[in-house]
Length: 350
Image 1 (cartoon, rainbow, N blue to C red):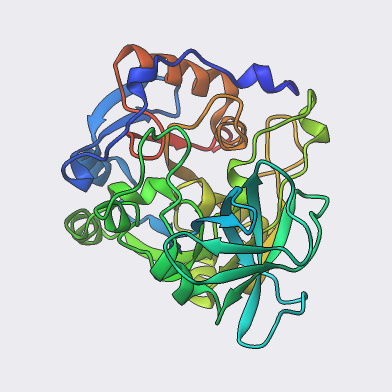
Image 2: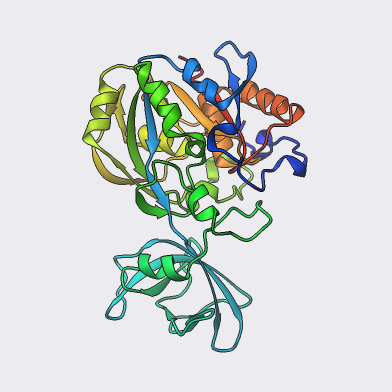
């Protein structure tokens, strides 16, 4: 139960989606029913599968072009992944400190500069590497305009190609509004205005939360015991309107594991959310102390073996049932990971 290897499965490489479907809602949907039976659907079938009075909670974070390529004065290559602003670190005038992951042949040192490829823009290293492996970098202005001009979309490592202009739109959900994520809340990639209109016609209501997907979501588990793994903190916000809808008692559907994580992290009791901006390092896995108090149903993509996201889904819907559904998905040639297909699961004790 507490070994990462308990959450693995065999996945042929050809099932890892390298491109999105031609249309957002053209993906497939695996329905893991509450009785453990697995059904195959097109994603548009979600309209009939959700309770007609449900509240769907979507993550409205927007992926920033957080990957920056450059080189040191010595000529050494540097790749930076901008994670979030670092307001507690002083930076030079007209710059903002950002917490970044850095990949270079030799460690970066305080005071070194990185020249962004193809530009005269210089980024200054503000400190030594922190215990979590990140470094503080001074970026021009507030950083976001700089990233829009010079950054690359941080497609996941299992997508074996560089980002393209179409990815700038296609790797964003239709809800993307608040910039700050380094990965998309991928379950939302399947949703379209047409599907939402059909859901609304059946009485389903849309609500939002904001969780800026960060390093904690995709950091691999490097311990042999899940109880020794610590998640990086991620920033989230719960609007008052969302809290009121949750308190109404209607069925709550999380559109993705990031929405699920924000809702459960903000829970102060059954159907009760703390409103406002916070951060969370909540790590939910089978056998953890967490009890689900907010979410009843979950729409999610298929996740990597031994990932914290797969562990979260297993805790929510039952490990044996989820892993059996994954084996079915492999046999049925579903498409996996960020640009892949989706599944609908239900809380195991609901």
